[in-house]
Length: 411
Image 1 (cartoon, one colour):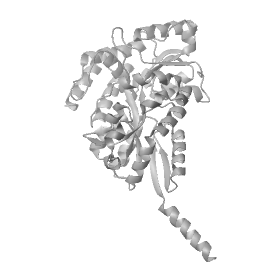
Image 2 (cartoon, rainbow, N blue to C red; image 1 turned 90 degrees about the horizontal axis):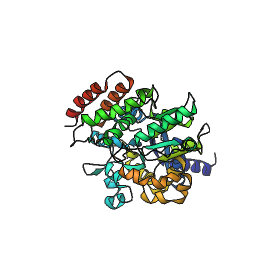
Image 3 (cartoon, rainbow, N blue to C red; image 1 turned 30 degrees about the horizontal axis):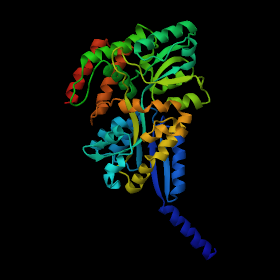
Image 4 (cartoon, rainbow, N blue to C red; image 1 turned 45 degrees about the vertical axis):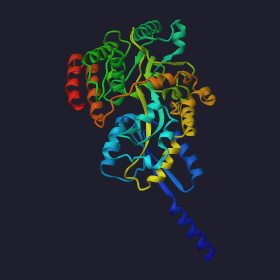
């Protein structure tokens, strides 16, 4: 064999073996198709890095279960993972997420570029454990065409929403059209379904503020009545998961839906959408005499403490948290930006015109209880809410059970 060819081949193999491989885990609902394109751009600019995408779990809970299994075993196969905002304290205390402080020497200045709630949410006991991927909160999606047909304005109160849903479904006489979809399956999204009316009824809940059984009863009664009294929500609401709401509203089967920001892009762009150009978005309603409130969501990039390439992983995470990627996610996936300036970006507003009014909703959204024990907190709430909506427990029994389990857990 030609000596020059041998040397060239050896050099190529040496270069390939020297490339740093970073394996990134994202959930199936976090638009892996868009993420793949973002990683491709990064690799073009960093030819010495090979980013491999792993996708799994259609819900926050399924992703949490998988990551817990991998990280409990000390597996180093994952370098970076996308975390639900409620998981940061758990991953920090468990030692699963690598502190990022040493990779960001000007941390305090750097974090000023993000929405304050996300800079705070990623910090635990004074250390930075993740960087924001995208912001999120729940909104009320509505069928703009149907509200216009019946000369109904987008509701500002829950009472108005129920009346509008009843009026439109009665007028349409379509057996497949339901009034309002929310999530009540035993999943993380159901915690928000419960907390939104809980907060709306004056309830507080944190490590320093005990669970409020009066507000809890009002919240569960409201959710239960949507199914059994006003009947604007379907009888199988206890089976509805987050993406079920998206899919059913997208199919033209609902007047109203409580959902995260990602739904907008799917309603407009999916091949099977039945509601393109027919959707409006407003803040969630309030109870009469109270203020509107929503649940803070969002996803965060974390580096595995077991990664063998932590510095390279931290560099990628900083890129993923930057304004360029945040803009891409806003345009391609209708993910709310984590950089305040992007809410005025003309390119983003062309695709997501409702983003111009979204920033106040995001900045005023309430955070779920922050605790390393949050997985237990979530499981208690979503299982008892699910039981009440399914009719397995009475509202009173569900509230009593929640309080009995949550009070000692949060002490």
